[in-house]
Image (cartoon, rainbow, N blue to C red; front, side, top):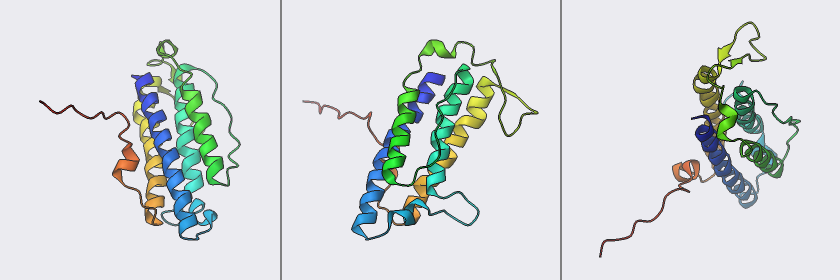
Length: 172
């Protein structure tokens, strides 16, 4: 289960890589400063776009690390450009692709403590399904929504990606 869900996160990260390409093209076409998109938020008090991307990439890498007991790579959170964000996504995907099924042998019952709630713990399976996956998608969808709100021409197909769909042969 864990490996398949990490593979799904990796696929979503690759899809978002393409969304960043569209957002950057949109900014150039409309003569909008890239910083305008990169610093946009859905509403006051919410993280801006850059922080949303940092959050869903962190969620993916920390999820994998915590349930396996491994160390996650450290990212400086100093991205300022679309290219910086693409590089961060690429590093996250590369990290997720290092995991094998055997890495998750004891993940269901591994105690997980989060830095912001050290007085509590959760078992790996509960942490992964009840926190990691929802947290990843919360920030992923919010970043997508910021691009839509700013006028970037993206839709459901861009979000989902459709990379695993194959044409059916028509019956003769």
